[in-house]
Image 1 (tube, rainbow, N blue to C red):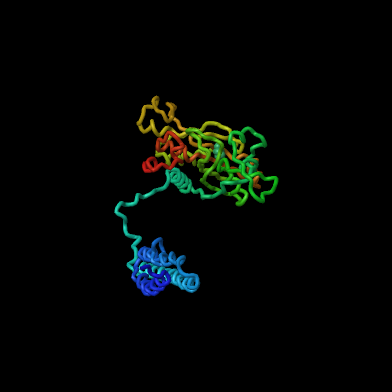
Image 2: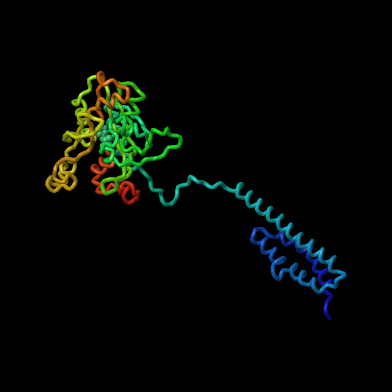
Length: 359
Ligand code: PHE
């Protein structure tokens, strides 16, 4: 005897109302709740099988039964949603009210400690030496105007020296049309900026990144310099020698030899390059002839310097009849490489921890 599908649906619907609340309330996790919903509404779920019977219901009962089945279905959905929200709220509450997670508890593996990058450390050490000699630390921006980087430093337009420092030019929004901007090629910009802002006497030292279109084992397109200068009445080359000799002794140790060789920079007259006696063969680590760092010469070049050119003083509104001054600039990476015996400048910027832990 076949059961009337309409009766079957009736029976199913009444059983169903009871089942529904109990099942959803029994679920204590989101997964259990979803499983319960699937048993009702999934393929072969009990409500789904009632829906399948609809096709066999006599037409006069279809409308009324159909509405009741659909109502049951939306009842399932809203009961499901309600229970879902309640479960999530309960989980959140348990989380908030439960024991707090102690984020300060030390891990089982101690976290490795970082330290200053060798270039930063050497830069600070150099600045410290000059500070101890009475220089005040100044700062300048890494993007500057052509006037501060070249023109006021007496580089004539198209002078080959501007080729020597192949530059990265940048467009600055809102800049006046007659002033080109660039990534500074040296820290000598700080001499100009300080003299334009403060009347002499001045003794300033400044360190930071500079940029040139250079890239090989000893040149990086970004590197660091420390610049110092002093302007006062009656400043002489002898005082420049005294300051740089004191620097060499304090930085490389007492007894470090210092040698001045004439050299050319457009913003100084006279100009010189300074060598210090080779720290490697002096320490007896290698015989002089075999020393790979100084290549057997016994000397290492560390900086450029000179008496500030009267034209540069004039460009900054400083009267060269009354004031004289000296300036010097050195590459921080070079000083760090010489101090630690680092053969390739690129090692300093790859940030490989196996290299950095050695300092
Ligand atoms: N600015 C020069 C350079 O980058 C170094 C220097 C500074 C030379 C001050 C003389 C005086 O090569």
